[in-house]
Amino acid sequence: MGTFEILTIKEVAELLRVGEKTTYTMAKDGKLPAFKVGGQWRFRRLDIDAWIQDRVASDTSRSSHDDSGRAQDAAGGRSGARRGGA
Image 1 (cartoon, rainbow, N blue to C red):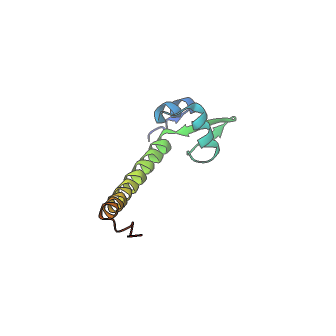
Image 2: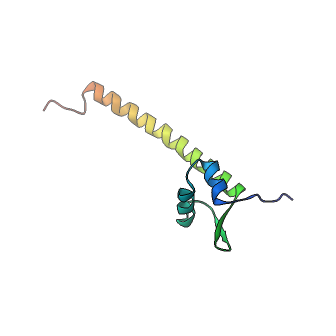
């Protein structure tokens, strides 16, 4: 059995490349998987890695959708179909 790596606010902030206050706020608001030990936030590395993967997968699928939507809008704009003759 493996051991779980436990991270601090500072370590998660460095990993995500955001400020410690942002990390604290996200943990407090339930936006990051976290738990408290003696009043201090702690994070399981496995949970943070999974959270990152979920965001990457979500952003990738959203980008694909947004790109196709933008392409259609741009084509519509070029054809003048949306502007009408008014």
